Image 1 (cartoon, rainbow, N blue to C red):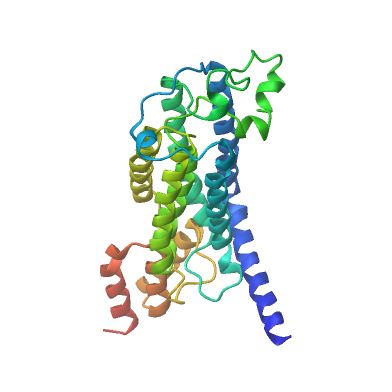
Image 2 (cartoon, one colour):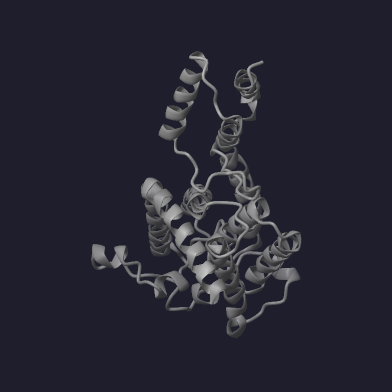
Length: 309
């Protein structure tokens, strides 16, 4: 009973922190979520342009035996496992004592990676439409071509979920691999279990092979996804402000926003000029939160003044 109360208190405390972050960042999160619909709309649109034809010669098709239509669910089942596992992991700070990140800030980064990769994907599959290798996209299938839409609503509704599952033409590069690689790269940076990091890369490779064996994508779609997503995450991660690391326990429960940081910096600076002391531990903590280790000179100076030396 005592542990249940303690867990409930921990969940409530973490929820209040994340809600404050959500109130500050909700516009960016909403924009990323809306773009997921735009990406689905673009994939639906290219299906109207798809023209079935002979399956292209593919090295992966030559090497990997075809799973067959009845076993196409295997790759989808693995992707569902990857997706749900990652989502659950991003919410573990609500329950577990160890907290290395804020869930809201982590999803901001994930959505930034996804949106950038999906923009490149939309440009790519609209540039050149390849004949789909999937069973429902081949010649003779009723689903390979879409008749012209009868209304705008038909296009906007994207015939969910049937239109998403049985889409054709959005090939280069694989959307499943965008999500998989973004999730794996994110866990590799913010996760704590070395074995799970290794296992995540193994699962990503298996997922790649299963997609090709299921004939849902050409091998080139997978290869392009591997180097494109890695490069996108690398460069965007460099541009985004680093999240505060909560694992040391020295960080405050809620990260200081820009206004609070600037206001407290000016207040401490005024105190120093007036000869008043500033708590050195508090000052050091703010330097760490800002993630600017280059301010060590100011840190040393503030400690010197605080100690009266």
